[in-house]
Length: 287
Image (cartoon, rainbow, N blue to C red; front, side):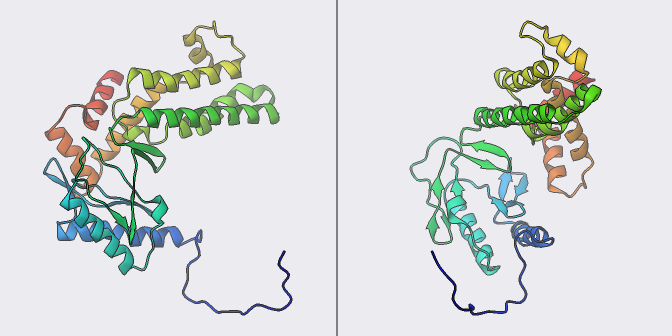
């Protein structure tokens, strides 16, 4: 145990911004966003999508994601980002900086650094709530969302058991499903690529089990009855609806924005299994 027997030295610190302060997130966003803007101005440290659209470092407050071709380009991008971070007197948490090699293994894949510490290689990593895998497969991401859905379902059931809502029970249950279960389990799904039938069934099963629990219905209850009684949509249709709404959002972006350039490039130069093809199919199916 440590006992303080005298006053400690006091130091006055000026011009600081505490983490979690009202302006901290905005200030951090401005600093990291400038890295991508500088790359776009120089037209050098960017990844060319289909050799047409330049993609700079993507940032979200204090997270930075950089895409590059394996080899000399990745070394250049790595040095550029490190130099910008150090010029701004910012510091990476080297333990959280990871490198994912997408595609066939390459024995000449270079070593990248966060400041002077080597980045760890990983097959998958969680970024902004989604899991990015080296094989581009969504299985790990769906598995993670299923775990989130199970946790959210239990949370809703605990609320319903411990809070008395009287004859509003089912109305409250449906609202909680939408605000807690669906919103957390389907986070970022509007930007997802095509989901396999098996992965879609995993998410729908969690939702069906939740509806059975709030209705007290046995496993033999026909599935259509669950949706008819509660008046809610199946998870698969919610995802399709989000795709269509996100398409509307993208098409209304300013013409010079990166999102607008990406979506119009996919419209004019479609490739197999791209995002727009999936959104277009959903739009046709939903009418």
